[in-house]
Image 1 (cartoon, rainbow, N blue to C red):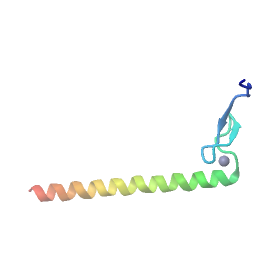
Image 2 (tube, rainbow, N blue to C red):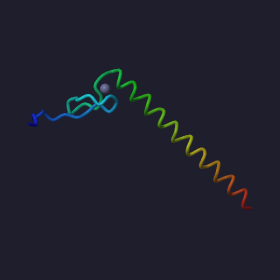
Image 3 (cartoon, helix red, strand yellow):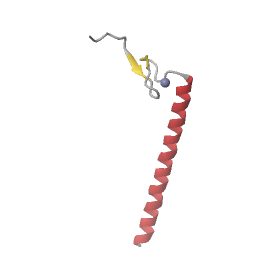
Image 4 (tube, rainbow, N blue to C red):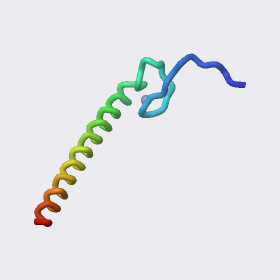
Length: 63
Ligand SMILES: [Zn+2]
């Protein structure tokens, strides 16, 4: 039998059930989330840097 539960969502960090208006369950998870976002942004910048570098190499290599 499936019990009817009030509308809820899950914490994006630990997966705990939380009210639908929230995205994260606690301060700790909020901090972890922020760190994750920062790391992801850094990775994106590094990727762009690498792509630009490879493009430059390719352009100069083909002249
Ligand atoms: Zn959490």
